[in-house]
Structures are given as structure tokens and as C-alpha cells.
Amino acid sequence: MPLTTPSSDSSQRFLFDHADVRGEIVRLNKSYLETIAGKQYPEQVAILLGQFLAGSALLSSTIKFDGRLVLQARSEGEVAVMMGECNSEGDLRGIARYAETPSSDQFTELLRDGSLVITIDSRKGEPYQGIVPIEGSNLAQCLESYFQQSEQLGSVFYFAANKNSVAALMLQQMPAQLVKDKEARAQHWEHYSTLARTLTDEELLSLPNADILHRLYHQEELRVFAPKQLQFACSCSRERTARALTALGKDEIDEIVAEQGGIEISCEFCATEYNFGPGELALLIEGAEEGTAH
Ligand SMILES: [Zn+2]
Image: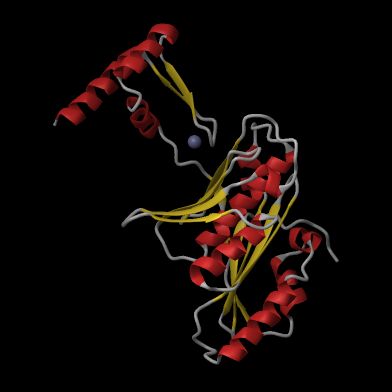
């Protein structure tokens, strides 16, 4: 068995020919390393963040949309916020926020009393948001119960991650089309999902997708689609940062300028630094005030 890690950052879909079941395999290497670069995340936080990134890519593959999907956890536990984001171009970014270095490596402690929030921010139309309490002992179980509750569809999520890469598999029931008989449909799902659960972390992380699918489903007829490329990319810009700054209001901006001579802001996701001098800030405030006056 070759143990070379597949290196591309990608999302690849597969469909069963004779059952209403689809699947997706996501693999992150470079995009994951770029997301955690320079952040000094403790290992368990980085690995969980990797899972959220891969989760956002898996979920975004299940819908046709033009925009971004955000998979976020807010909790009372050691990690207050954990989020992974994937847009329709395959751009990924993510972040974890916590006050002190977490002492636990347990999902239930890191995200204790938390909620899982899935936001679909479409460039056209209204945003959609689904929220469920965090249940289960890992992200996979949490997502499975989300789909059971919200769509009444069976799903299997499987995440494997280490310091360098993340791999994830999703298997999901689709609405009945090929197989209308309820019993046959349930049997199919039982069969495919049971096989998916036999996968090991090592296999998911190290085997090429074709070998994984052969290993699990060599007796089934499958259609495998071309992989979609994923990459780390941040949507921040000088203009957006300036807009966010004006929300502070004139008084607060004046105060910071008096103390520091200007304002320096770095993006939480990609660490790009944006500097605003006093002249530019004065123009921004003027612009914002005119905007509210008319
Ligand atoms: Zn950024």
C-alpha cells in the first residue's frame, strides 16, 4: 500500500448509479497549513480548525450557490469561536478564538455548551442560517445530527487530521428518485453507510481517492467526478476594512489617532496589515457622515 499523502487541495464528488446516495471527499494540505500559519494554535485547536475548514468545503459541495458557506461553532467552552468558510470558488479561510490556551483536547470540552451555526451567504438573495446545539462527541456526529434534524436525510461524516493535512469524507442520502421503495432505500443506506464507517484515519489521510473508493465500494457502480480545486484565500480588502473602521465613530477614531497617530489593523484570517493615517481617517469619517446625512 503506498503511503504517500495525496498532495492536492481538492473536493471530489461521487455518485452511486443505483442508489440515491452521493459522496464527497475533501483533502486539504497547503490551504490548511496557510490557514494556521503564524497563528501558534495549539495542536488540538489547529486540528479541530482543519475539520471545520474541511466541513465547510463538504457542506458547500451539497448546494448550488454563488457566495460563501460558513460553518461556525460558538461555545462556553475553552474555544469561544471556531469557524471555517468556503465560497463557491473554492476559497477557504478559517479562524479559532480563545482566551487562554485550552487544556483539554476533547471536542465536548473545547466547544462545551455550544451551538453549531451554518450560514449560507448568497451573493444574490437572502442569507440562510441553521443553528443546532452541539451534540455528540465530535464534529462528524454533530453534522450528522444536524442533517437528520433539518433535512431528515441520513449522512455520514468522517474527518481525519494531523499537523499537516486534513481529509474528510461525506456520504449523504438524496431525496428518493432512483429508488422509491422505502425498504430498499433504507437497505441501500444501511449498506453504504456501514461500509463508509469501516474507513480508518490512516486510510483516509494517506490513500488516493480512487483507492479509498475501491476499498469501500469496489462492488458498486460509481460515477466519480473531476476534483474541484480548493485554496486558501481571504476576502478582506482595504476598502472593507475602512468601512468597518468608520463604524467605530468619529470620537473613538479621534481618540485612537491622538494616542497612536493613526490606525493599524491586521486581518484576523490572513494577517494582512492595513494602515490608515490621520488624513485618510478624516476623509473616511467625513464620507461616512455624509452617507448618513443623505
Ligand atoms: Zn484577510
